[in-house]
Length: 96
Image (cartoon, rainbow, N blue to C red; front, top):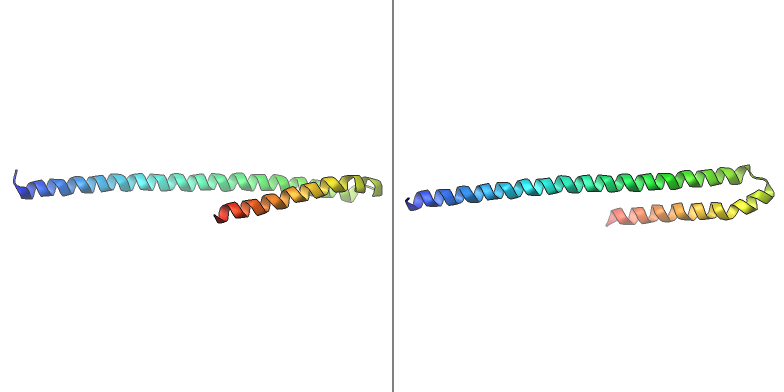
């Protein structure tokens, strides 16, 4: 085999290797995007649950009498605190 043919085969092999690495990178990128979508969906579902819990507590407080309102106030404040912390933490997590 002459040097020209050997050089050609070497370059072809390197091109094939580069194509294989490119395919691997593309697969990793797709996987990363899918992972991010799953994370966003999980975080959104968690926040949605906290929003619904807070709304339910607010409804309880607004429908309760004066005595019940005071009793439920702590639960309402706890639900609100949980929601606001979750929102803040989620935003911080996705800004990274």
